[in-house]
Image (cartoon, rainbow, N blue to C red; front, top):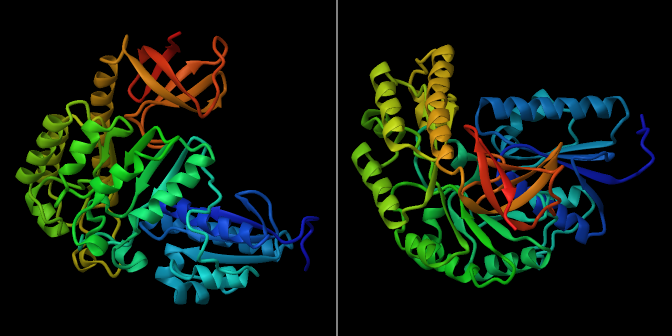
Length: 434
């Protein structure tokens, strides 16, 4: 049955999962466009490419449901072809082919040339940094490495993404310059582990040198660091953060837990004492740094005592930003050999307790900002508000600054100075300082 759409051979790329997937979709779209293809992101098209996530149960479920939804559209004649790529496809391809055979073809995370060929396009090596960005025009993700060499017991990323592979400084700078030329003002550096950057290429941790090169790119005003690992953190990065105004005083460092028993079982290579010492060093070196972390509750063997220790530590550390996930029992990971012995309702209860503590901490820290002024970038307009962020906030996950749009006109993508007039637990309200 042929599709009912009039527009033929329009390729719709649907992205699920994390910022690394967003980046991969943008590279795919850039390659398609260079081959003269009509490509859109999450709009109508008669050919669909689904970039899946296979990280934890919820993400896998969303990916499978999305595949089923488009397979149904194909059966109903609303689309012609459905292709699946990304982490879920990398991890479960044989199972998916068996369970959902109506997909035209499945591709893994490293099979971009094959996917392009199936879409009637050529893979072009010379397209360094050419991608169709799907984020608001003022910021873009910049992936500086692929894969991971860390042995964390709960994580399936190395299965799906392979070993750590850094991209050269030269290549990253070319990409940053192309983004800046398009009007991107904020680069969000992403990798499975930023702290490992350069070990394979330069035989040393080279994140600081990369930052030194990126701050020289004209047009870029903010550079933000996402996903650092607590062991082997290159402290020279803090010197650059202090010295270079373009490098945001912000670090996303997922710590996962703090009880020594759990950290050991998680194979994190650190202890409560070492982690706490590291965070104190961060605070001493960069006093106004915002630290974002993520935690996992309900890991196999997590006792009430372990959880209470984690809770107390969250209260003591007073993180500016924190997210909490429930443990997901993933096959082929080291922790899969352990008994998933914390009941689901206990996991959810524990996550809620942590987020309740964090909500209170965030409210208290936000109250201190009333009356202060901040440089704010405007991401979008929503209802009667312009929505922006300070350098201490990452898009989608952190606090936002709301400015009354009935009183002021602001341009999205531009920076402005805002005085904070009111504060809630995760939102700030402000007015323009003329």
